[in-house]
Image 1 (spheres, rainbow, N blue to C red):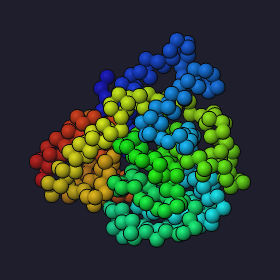
Image 2 (image 1 turned 120 degrees about the vertical axis):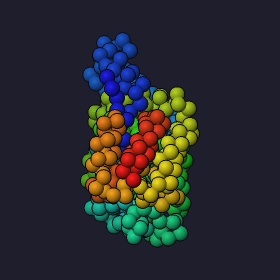
Image 3 (image 1 turned 30 degrees about the vertical axis):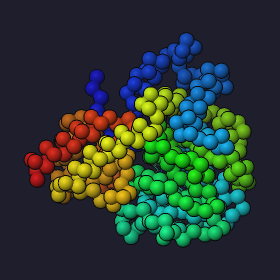
Image 4 (image 1 turned 120 degrees about the horizontal axis):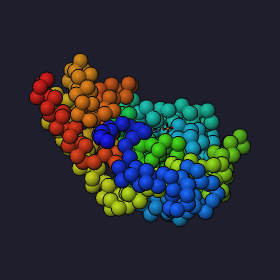
Length: 360
Ligand SMILES: *Cc1c(COP(=O)(O)O)cnc(C)c1O
């Protein structure tokens, strides 16, 4: 068996020890005689698995007791609708900050439910920056202020938490959740699909302040009403049980790595390996402004895009896959989530140097 270095933006690589444990437990979880996939979500075994996953996530992120942790389905794209349905709470609309492809999607969807005020946009920079806070034009009656903490496609990330006044701050953290510590108390709601930095696709994590729950628009589907989901401990409908189990194993793995502060140190070191090299060569370039470069998704370009396919082919031959950039930005993108070992990034940089020496 050979495992590749998988630089996919999502679904993405998972820690190998987690996959091994899941394989070992596949046919018989802890003497239950069945796979987690085959368990009733209301049975004592699965309830223990879900409770432990939630407890571990609460501990890792230091989630205050006044927040609910919800295990939902539909991904971040469904949350783009579920958030306004639940959080408008009688307000006419909400503020959105536009920093790239994913914020644009959130904005488009929210417009179906209310008025969207685009409080700031980095479109003018080609989405290579984050608009400074003092340029944001917030609506004093906004129900909430929405940001995308890390633009997975463009590779721009907030390295600060915006202060937005009384309106709750809502963040799509799909691709940066668990990459470093965040102060949850600064947010009204955090959401993200699991398939970037947590586990298999199909599980959506929602962390929401309790006082924001319970005023959903009347037409909100019950399975998407945070109150229904919270009141039923995420078991109003059948939750993505296997995804929750794998997420729990990943949370345990993160704890064994030393928690999120330790992950931040590792993630900074991995990102620095790549960015430092990109900044010393004219053969490759990194488009994103230095103060908002993503630790998780590193887009870069070759000086001559005619070499792109040769670059990708050579990478694949060396066991490094999924480096092609998103079609909207072109070039390359290396996604280096928690599960990507330093050795994977070292191998990539070594290959980039070799390719430059041969073609530069
Ligand atoms: C991947 C991603 C999404 C889309 O998630 P789905 O699970 O496909 O709905 C939304 N926002 C961000 C920031 C993402 O990285």
